[in-house]
Length: 209
Image (cartoon, rainbow, N blue to C red; front, side, top):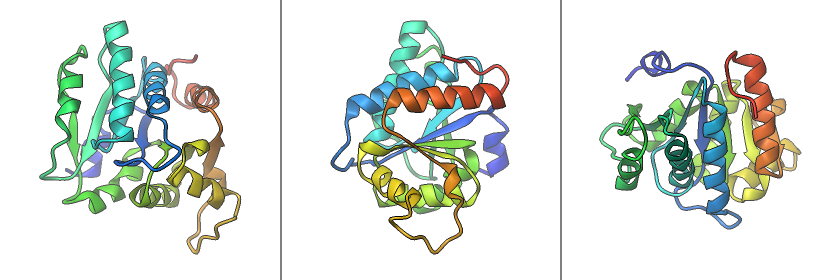
């Protein structure tokens, strides 16, 4: 599917949550769950969330989104961005059945996971980074090159820790990246409050906490 065909389906902000399929040390699944719950509240009036449709961080985030939806009796305002010939874990479909929309929305981009990573930053207005591995770092850097902000929960380990070191210039990058696009947070509440303020100022109608 072409990029415009995906982005034209959804109203901004389009918020992508990226992280590891097999999380690295420092990861707390409860944090990812809470992140999903809180993010769903932010887009309750306007906007949409997406993950890469894999296990690990993405699935934990979606559990939080779904629990919010069950409590409030609302749709999930969520989709998975996946490559052709790939199917998300069945748990995604089981969780989606609990929401008001009842089905999992799937958008396809790229022939494999490597190609799909190139679409993440292009689809998103901004990204939220939790933990992550090498593929997540690739997604993050490609998104930064496209000028997309990345909000990182820096104490979640993995790629989030690496990106914090990029931000502080402990790790030098050969590519031309605007480090101001990297926003580091020590807590979920700090990240969510910042995001709520940013979205409410840029996207009229977005919920504020």
